[in-house]
Image 1 (cartoon, helix red, strand yellow):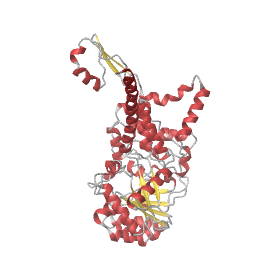
Image 2 (cartoon, rainbow over the protein chains, first blue to last red):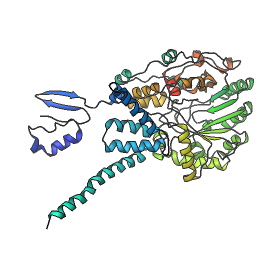
Image 3 (cartoon, rainbow over the protein chains, first blue to last red):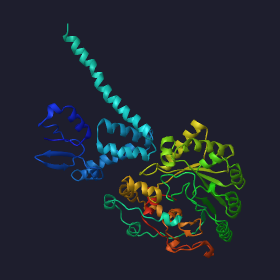
Length: 153
Length: 330
């Protein structure tokens, strides 16, 4: 049996206990560490390591020119312009949640605080991301309705 | 008892020890830098550790339970030292200096002895006790006021400084404006200080100043001259919080990673001498909190003929990374 340590998964597992006995609960590696239990052996394997964030520049090892172009561009994007650095960090935080990147969430939570944002503003930014993601799904319901109408009597 | 209490070193968890940084002195030496005194222009006078607040980032662990206060005898030695030496600036601090029972006399004695006098104010004492006579004497001597105001957000401010601090701070800033402080063109200087509300670096000063000026004016009609943003120094109550919250190692790494060699020449410790409530001298307020004496040698103000000589070595420790990170603490 495999059990993911993420508390929400354990909670989910308890809810669906009848369905999971002796079955694989979850084999999808999540972003945090995975603890799996098999034949009495407990193993811990980190999948996303926070310290990898500081090694980002290593990505330039095989393609230094492309990496330089990317990091130069990246730096220019976040510099003060028509938008302040604080506003750009809030946008980045919202996008980080949309793309569900734990490195970006870590980095831009700190960046938002260091640029002077507060938790209320940051939470609202996350809700903007959620609204767009949810809205993007929901608006496709129109397509669903179009198809349904076309083939229905 | 105060200093001894401040010097207690909190144990650092194993995880934090493993992520500790190289000694500050090694970082300086590796870059061929030395931290030595220039001309000492500022006398900082710490009149005691009593405060009506117990801010979670306070490197001195000042608070309502602290009774260490400068005696009048020591104060006279401080005033004599200031009189013998022409300091450009006298910087009155604490604790909350407003709470020293003889603070009005102290301001009246010290202000004429320097070109400029500064008074560190936590804003809430003025809100709780009015203290018109204190503002009066500051106004009369053109004493500049430096007030703590970490954030435009009440939740952040009170997380650092305690419940009820935000509305009291707003009320005192309005009152100081009424007395003429902080008004555009006014020679009654009102400057704000913002420290981060946690284990992260401060907001870039110029951007934050524009935002604070605009927001305080729009929301409350408050004006001030400048905003200074400074890193929290990993000493005292802030150090304890860092350790207890598991942030110590990463915070130190962040400070060390932000080491900016360009800040070293302009550090305040090069041009300031700090005297504690007992009359003992230090290179800065942070070394005072750490118990690191002036140039590494314990000296009482009564033994000092003049200011420390240019070229004297400044005592350093790892907390100095807080003053050299990013744009620095000058």
